[in-house]
Length: 331
Ligand SMILES: [Zn+2]
Image (cartoon, rainbow, N blue to C red; front, side, top):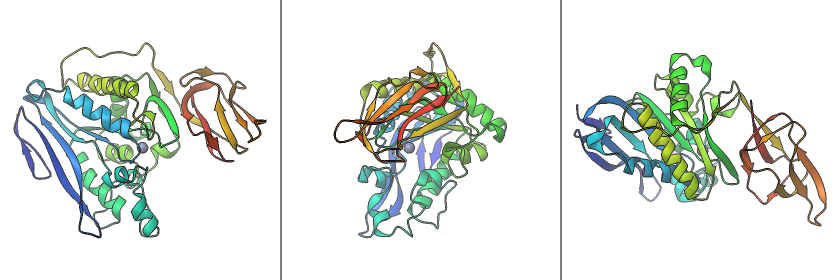
């Protein structure tokens, strides 16, 4: 096995290193650093990039990738791991999806504000583009990649793997195989929407020859140890499936492969009461949620527009007209 060399750090076979990569400079001279966990195995195998926390309110992802890597013994590892547990530290500092302070100060300069949508990035660009370029440099030194998310604050997902567009060829096919190895039991293989747009981390990584998909789990802004435990198991499943660590994978009883998301939005403002448990199978016309006005009267009954699986709940107490109240995965 060779040394693992990333961003100027060298990790000998059988070693683990925690490091920090300078990424941005702020007005007061503070240097924003990306945390790195580098693990070099003792046997040949793939090099995997694992990223989390590119949105600052997605703490479950940070907790689960670090918990999974704690269980990896470098001496028993085949291949190597490059992990960035917080891919946008400025957003984490804001405890928000985006680095809010910089965005509010100069919104014109800071658009695009979401590094997740800016890949492959631009080293001469704004904060989001510089961050994406730095991350992409590390991603493209790896063979495969995993990008871990939690839905933004106010949302809760079942543990779900979301694939890049399958028309992207052999690397997208490999990403799909990896999503099955993750073993969440929930996979979305969509042909439209935000997750497969140009610029999204997993899309551009896959296009660059590094098969990658998005893994969403749990609720934004809250640490949920049940989800962390599930997600940890999934990351270990993937490492086992790739032949990087020993041990049997925990297979889900059933894997739902969905072809699309159906997002449902409120047509009235009010207090949101969700009536269906997350993960439930629903039939077109089933009552999903009720919206109450401030007098307690029902102003809207939200029903399933299609048959599907209730994969993403809104956990906000109130909604305005146009806000998302539920998302179904379409089978
Ligand atoms: Zn996210």
